[in-house]
Image (cartoon, rainbow, N blue to C red):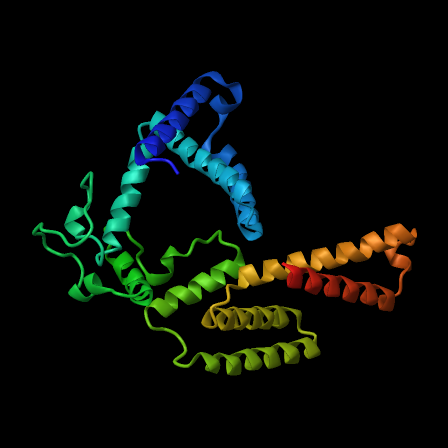
Length: 292
């Protein structure tokens, strides 16, 4: 692995190349926040795909692509004297210090080399004493939202920090998780199943009535309750659904490949034939998992 000096040198090299490209490359020169935004979304999804596959080489590559976009937005902002990459780094560092009073004294905010506890400096604490004594990951999580509300430029409310543009499944999880951090949650996680069954029953009733609008509403409530159940049992619903998506694709591709070898289109196969091939693919997966 590289030394801290080597890491700083590599980051500086990246900034130098970006400066040159912004000045000399016709494509880089014309980019704006608006034009880069779709590419940024794509790069983040590519990173997420590499993470799901645990593809180390591609994780490294895609992290670089995401880093490029962070630097590019900072470069664009610096050209109109709004902020630069140093401001981005300093704001992030100060936020991390403020949100970790169990590691840093808040008086260290703005210091070039913040020192972890124990600290000798005097300084009025901006947070309750108990927050500086968090010993477990759960205690840190419980303090997190309260600390964010105390930030100068922090969220105005607990749920204000959930981005509007998040995909709905991830947004539901984040909403519930943030509410939990301030105590709004089930006392016993098993109680959630009563709510799941209740929402499923209400959905079935509306579907039987043929009421489209109410069915959509109840379907949303049912999904929200399932996300809640996943959260309580420490299952990320987006990760779980993506694993199922990949599993379905793999098995369906097996059926399709078989039909091509036979010269028989999928639409000419019976459901029973396709189900038999599906089960074959399923058994192959089990064998591969056992051999792994």
